[in-house]
Image 1 (tube, rainbow, N blue to C red):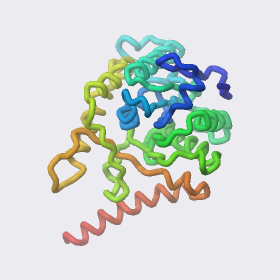
Image 2 (tube, helix red, strand yellow):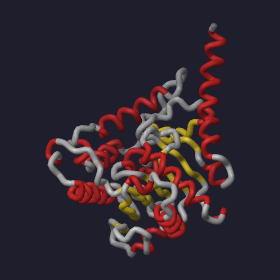
Image 3 (spheres, helix red, strand yellow):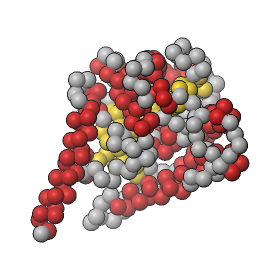
Image 4 (cartoon, rainbow, N blue to C red):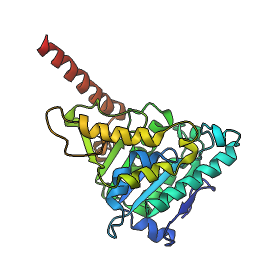
Length: 282
C-alpha cells in the first residue's frame, strides 16, 4: 500500500499480508498521537478482542517527535522519541490483538494545515482498503489543536468517498476534553466495562508518556469509572466503565453540512438546558 508520506508504515501483529489485514477491519480509529487510540477507541478494541469476525485497526497520524519528556526520557532527541513512541504503539497493537496498525508519521504542523493534501489522501486510501463499519476519532470540541485537525481530516476523507463506502457510524471521542457536558439526548454512551486489566495494559505500554510525568493510565481509567457512575442521577450503576462520544455521522451522511454549525448545535443545546433548569428552579 502506497502513501503520500514515504515514511508511513503498516504493522500487522499476526503477520498477515497488509492488504488482507486491512481488508478484515470492522472497527477503525483515526487518532493524532501514539496512545490516543487506547484512550479514545477502547470501545472498538474491546468489541473486536479475540473475535474472529471483528477486527480493530488503528491509524496514528503524527510522528511523535514533539512529545513532552522527563525522567528516563528527558535527554532523548526528537528522533529517539519518535522511535520509542512507534515501538510503544506497536506493542499496544500486539497486546490488543489489533488487525492492523497504520503509522502515517506526519508532523503535527502538516496535519493542522488544511492546504496539505497528503494526510487526507492517505486516509482515503486507508478507508478504501478497510471499509470499516465504525470509525472512532477525536471529538470536534477537543481542546488539543492537533486532535481537532485530525477529526477534520477524517471527515474530509470520508466525505471524499462514495456514500456506499462510508462507515455506518462516526464517533468523536474523548481525550483532552470530556463530553459529560453534552445533553443526554446528544451523548453516545459506549460501554467499556469489560477487561479492565487489558485496558490498563494498553495504557501502561506507553511508558514514555506515563513515566514521563503524565499518569494517563490512572486518569483514563478513573474517567471511565466516573462516567459510568455520574451518567445517570437517579439510577443505580449498570456499567462499571463508560466513554462518551459525539455522533459525527450526520457530517458524512450530508457532506455539505457545515461542521462549525453542527458543533455549535451541541453547545447551544447545552447552554439552553442549563438556562432552562436555572429558570425552573428560580
